[in-house]
Length: 366
Ligand code: ATP
Picture 1 (cartoon, helix red, strand yellow):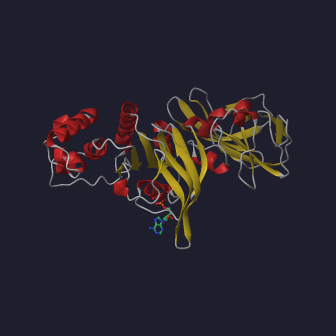
Picture 2 (tube, protein in one colour; picture 1 turned 120 degrees about the horizontal axis):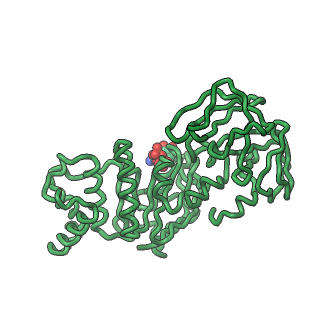
């Protein structure tokens, strides 16, 4: 297995820039997710790592070797796509064995590797079946088997679960992570689905318009979003944003929103801008009659153990709070809101950048 190093990677298609100045390291054995909205450059980045697309500039190193200008076939990497293209006229065993047969490997060695891959993926009983009658989950396992048998330096997966229905996707997420824990293979996984990335990744690179907006563990990215974009993309419902006029100075521990002082983790950098945004996740809001930050309940969505309550604040902003379902709320009711101070984020509105706070200093990535 091997580390993948991406340095100042840039890709333009005529006048359009799909990937700009992307730099990151996928540590040896890491499960690394390229996450972001449609069109942000995830697949293009993956295709450059695979050798299916040449970068406009920048370098790619695989296990310390510069492979930037090597063909896909010269890179010891296995690729699994969303549309798992299996050979319909071959059975499962022949499909899985295909990459080894094309390397002219001895028949006994091929059989040994195919049997081992099938055992890991729990499809031994399907080996003699035709692929055409298989369920989509089993077809995906066969596609993974074809990648595993090669024992490559790294796996690249592009939305491999995208064609599966939601329930089965959850199962396959668990299986893929378990497979990774067993093989400990360096893996780069492309998805637009934050839940998949949060569930499986050791490291997430969240991309936006061709750039890596934040690099970190799922918890870093959730707890300490580097920008408004990240805070908005991750979390369901997403973080609430309360814009307010104001400046902060290093050492400040409060901000004044709607004439109410709100406690924050200590601010480590000041700003000249007069527009700030306070970010609070729905689960970090409590309804409390003691608070002078007032709001009216608009509606409540019951989710079993919790409920999502939509509240309208005096300045016209609305927020969503995730609170226990056992708390009774009524549309039209007025209540106070309190926020857990250690978990608030503060952003500069113009740049969208998070201002550094004591909370951010706990971060080890990005
Ligand atoms: P999606 O999941 O929708 O594919 P993505 O993040 O993987 O999103 P890419 O496929 O990397 O995005 O595409 C990034 C941008 O580059 C898109 O706007 C896409 O239209 C453009 N693009 C990709 N390949 C080409 C190409 N060969 N020629 C021109 N533009 C391209």
